[in-house]
Image 1 (cartoon, rainbow, N blue to C red):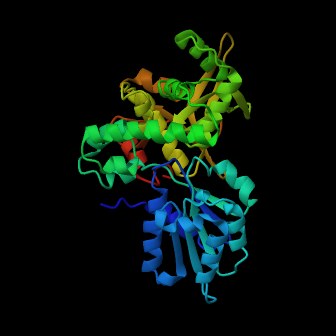
Image 2 (image 1 turned 180 degrees about the horizontal axis):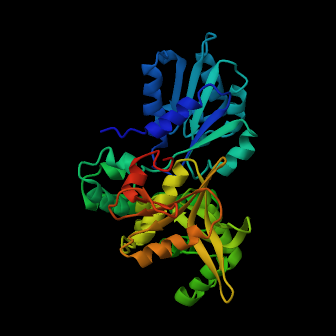
Length: 412
């Protein structure tokens, strides 16, 4: 069964022939290679590109091991370009080639090529792109399956699908497995043998339990404000381990670079400034997050918040968490805005609320939104099955399924 990734295929199509190297990144096992070598390749073939004008090499395939030598790869690709028509170069796991950046920059000087590469997180990260290609690379970040992509192959209803998704996440291979036992085993193996090992190998760390323990702490408190000092104090008080704030800061950076977690900075809406600390961390995949804590904690409210964050990022928004002042004659409070989503000149304020059973609960969720004195859209996303609507104060309410299953849900 093929899972369509039309959202990312569209991005690749839009980036065709733009004189940049298209660099497909994302957490390991999220489907980067399949997107390039199968979905995009099939698109090219179906749209009239001749097979001999697609130079496709999987560099992690043993039969292609000779091309791990930069000179041989360069020579082979150039030998395939025999006319002035356009050639598509698709290179999977390019980081395996020593000095690959020089090879790719050389290909950019060929007038009739369009270049696409993927790279493993352990060696080829978004921060590398800036330095290696000096503005001539375009990152296309791939996330695990969105809930919409997940439901395209899930055979039950939305509620059952949601229960499955918030437990095992959206890694494509997990979604296609047919038993809970297989899914849990696969995620646990990836946690042990791939994700943590990638970070250790890339950053030349000694193998120890501190890094994994840090991920477990963050896993247990997704959506909660934290900082390096709080995390260091947690190590001391709960595990009797003395780990410096600087070390924790380095570990957090490594986890971000490997796309295991993403951070959301705090933004003072009225003061129009960022606040350095505390911040929030969210996981790139809920199944991975759950594997770090042995599938022990549900906390559906926080998981829902994590999923909303990921969907906003997938749709191309820059996402912060916000604070807004509530000031009166005899009191002062800072109210939280779960998400401030920015794209170009468009901004949306979003609250995640698992349920709004009472008028008082609704007023509580609206309070921070109504303290923002601008005309940008204000939305509450709830798990309750309710009809989308706008109240007399201008606040829109929609349920989580309408938000996740409709790509344009924030545009209406």
